[in-house]
Image (cartoon, rainbow, N blue to C red; front, side):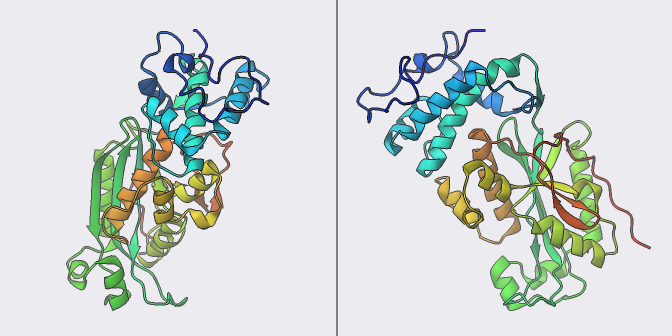
Length: 348
């Protein structure tokens, strides 16, 4: 297969300076080899795939030098030049400058390495990502002795091939310990006392969740993973709720993608810049819906996940519950999908 074209222009090494737009935008033909006019389509296809040989690649290969040289040119581009180049490749142009640089670098890298991927040395991404953002009972000031119970169980089913939300699930949950919601909780979440009074208990809702996921053939026909905004949804709220309901922790929820950790590592930003609204802002988006609605939060988290996948991020499991404790999952671990959902047994 023919190698990728010469962008940045041939003959200029890593020491070369990008000349402030004086040469104009680099033509598509210099970036993509002849016969590859469907660059965007191939880029999106590449984003659905993940390399299984990243640890065994020969980084002395000249392709990596070409990538490094190009990264140097991209680092010197102005925000306007970055947007012009992204627009030329029909890629998203919103976001802060560091995000735009990351997007363009990953686009070029994907193009350069596509030949290796097309030679069959890859595994597929997860087919689906289940975005979950619980809402739980709460009181103002969050006193340490307060027991949080899940009162909203939402799921957004994100198709990683189409990068679209394919379906959603939402059920409210009736709390059993703090049955009366605080005014603070109602105002924060928008969940009224009447909604939870008419809802099922957590074990009943969890059975509905399992049935819904099984109808989607998750873990059987399709490879999937759970994704959350932080660690608390699974390591705290679900863990505590299972203890309250005397349920064993569900196996299908023992591993997940913490998108805050993925976002911070991918875009190289500190932890204090990985809150939901900040991530949206840095990516050039604004919150859509009602903040602290579990379903709306999950939809907005999905928008971030889509943008990260488009930018070349390989979203993968990075946290898990082990022995009742939160632990990290190494990036060198094999990528595995979550098991088919099953209703956990009750504790004795």
